[in-house]
Image (cartoon, rainbow, N blue to C red; front, top):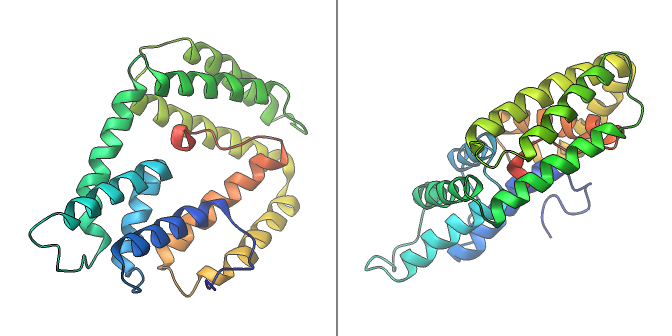
Length: 225
């Protein structure tokens, strides 16, 4: 039984835990991750690399190792897979900028999020104009096939930050404090396993996710494609 089994499955923490379990199972060794490994995952999460892309890079690295001259030596660190994860991420970003299924997925996401903003529940005087403006620009960006995936993701993060600030203002400190307390309870099982920097990032991302969910919204990021 895992140390977090039975706890509420936090989507942000699940990103880290899934990578840990996948790496350990592919490596064939019961040892878990070091602090440096957790910080590497934090770097991938901060860069907005989707979970499936990270897992693809890990699989490519360990499959290559299994057929190499050094296959009898155990892979000691997740850092061994970093180059392949970077390669997988670069392929994904290139695909987003081309006229193919990945880019169509991005356009679909942008349109769907704009529509979600237009029908979002419980918006107040601060968040309503931010939501309306963001929805309008999302519709425009969804129709622009030449958008840079990197530039688009940066813009999405800025818009999400502005939206979250407005939502926090409209919700008030009591409601926000309640969400933060709930996140802290749900992340308690991870506290002994992850470095403080990693846990802090998970907490920040989890609070953002739950504030948006109150209004029927998801994260404003291509990360989930």
